[in-house]
Image (cartoon, rainbow, N blue to C red):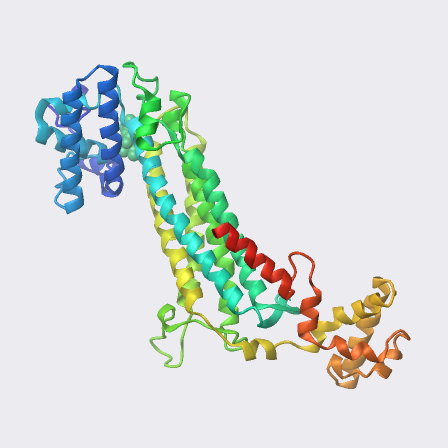
Length: 457
Ligand code: ARG
């Protein structure tokens, strides 16, 4: 007789390469806890339906706990026939309990089992992920509060544009991460839909109470259609998209900091703890942490697009292709868990060079403010934009910074310039004038900080 759980109809052995090709134990063993917990709940549900006795359910549950203890202690020994975590646990349970172990899989299939395990495992990872993300957002918010006074150049097209606050830049990324955290919460309800009790595809014949199972396992709802339940991997695709967008945000944040930490900018210094040196050039200190965050984003995007390819042509219900959901999912979870923590570490230990940031502000970045000065005197903006442009040209011709033009120089361009135009050449004032909600004024930035602190709780 074949040693395989499904071996009854088989006479020949598998090609050894096929055996290895088919097996998922090398990676899905990490879901051992979810598999045990799911089986314990299922044993209780079987007893409630009357198909096994209460004593048998307790025996199964206690036996499963012994299997769990072996995994936890690192003493679980894999055997050659252990195809996946489900077969491995059942094989071991049979060794420990004998015949009664054969009752556990009554009315269940690995199809509803694996979908349940994967969801249960992911729900646990999401709890941890949410915590790391909140930590990162908190670090950004607290830095923004502590460093509210620091001004820096703001860029569009990577060209100096208008002065802004360092805090405003920090929070611009914190808001993207906050949306990531919200998105994670929103997708959680769809991960938390229970497949168990759907059987291989057609449903459970022993009347197991799926609402009871959902309650035992902490699922928010019960999947309504067994055919859908065993093949629905939307939760994997959705998580991979979430991971991709979160990595995209981390990557763009990293790119900013890579630029700001270059010698030419010198706005920030990445701590030694998150940098590495060059094996050849002794002077080098490279922001490898940030480059890896940027680089690893590509790997996660690949996992999303690869998985969508895996899914797109599948006929209804379970197909073995679905086993290919796990490695991308696991890798994305691992990559995100590390990446968010590394980003937090980089941000918490980053040194800011306030002088260098302030010294990079140039009067030309106030050309818009010059136009706005005339707007406040009642001149239409379209006209004032031209006048300020002419002022930039005039200063260039005279070899002066824009602020070097006297009120008299400016009056040659427009009669409305008064002596109070000198007030325009003040970066702090420029920033604080942008006081509408969402702007870079001190008040508006403090309001963002309050809003994010309230959200963090
Ligand atoms: N290892 C399989 C997976 O990861 C478990 C489900 C196997 N089901 C089956 N009908 N062969 O999806």
